[in-house]
Length: 332
Image 1 (tube, one colour):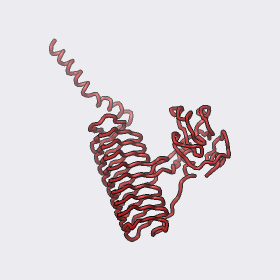
Image 2 (cartoon, helix red, strand yellow):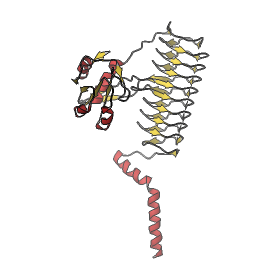
Image 3 (cartoon, rainbow, N blue to C red):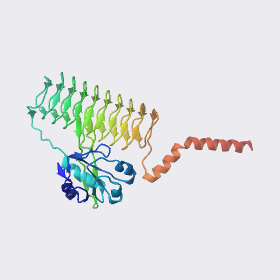
Image 4 (cartoon, helix red, strand yellow):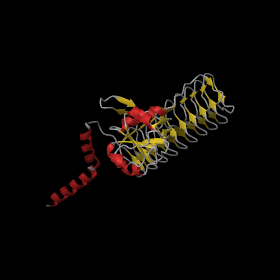
């Protein structure tokens, strides 16, 4: 817990409001309460700012007049947010063995495992050798965790889940902010990973924890080997993701989506229900209509690629137009 005065000093912010208010954590602009801090970065979030319920908001001076609560005014909002996240990051130091507070419910636990503080493991679970389960993790019934899996603090696993060797759940997300000298400052990810029931996760897959809210894998999802799922991703029920696919931060996949091997989905993309993505495709826009999609072209300078893409997407219309013109010429 920090006072607003202490936080302002750490991020070199101008404080407008009650310097003595105590901040207990960070939340999104839509969910933050009077003891939490949030941030607003950009004019497109003006309406969100007007309705914010947070105890304080990190923002720039242009948005200050719209702020209904205490404010921390900075030049670079994202950089200030990156710095302040580390104040609220809980660190876990794992010691080999089973912590006395862990509730393991007669689970079968192989040698050389680490089970942290306040872990809850459901009935009829099997934990193979060299598994690390950090503090405050919950695991449902009939779940199988194979060797060398790491489930990091605070994450939740449902019933009848199979987690293959080498999987990492709850790793730090890849979020960074640059300062004026172009040096990187990492963002501490404060959310968790929540995995539903009847999910299977292939070997050496990595699922990052959310930045503030949770990364979510819904019921019935199938994930192949060597898949990367970034922070804040939501995977809809009964979707399937093939090997080496990469899903960037803050993407949302609908129900029953199928993502081919080696496909890449850019950040903040939304896919409707029942979308199929061909293997090795790149998805760089929202897909709101169910269907089978394919997208890959040879690499080039970005601006040239965008111009080429416009032509490629309209080749059928161009061909139709030219055929009409050719037909008219022949008729003359």
